[in-house]
Image: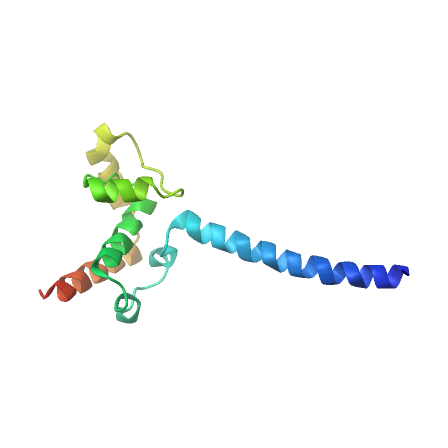
Length: 129
């Protein structure tokens, strides 16, 4: 095989592998931040929330806190987030109140707005206003 044909053949092998590696890296980064990482940098719309179950809405809302190191008191949420490879509690369980105050203080205005929107939508879906 001539040098030009070899280079062309290698290009057809390495270019797709490069883009596959990029896709895997993007997926890993998203998984590293949870299912809905965009809730920390994009406003949540009703169209984002409508298809989700009440449990998914609860996880979405609490995922924002979890990214800040929130320590969950409820066993189900604690178990769920502790099973996520990206989750890192902000401190030991015995220091939960201080850690959670710090996590709350670190929320951006957008994250606070998204938490409020998700909570309101949860109440709406439960039949309250």
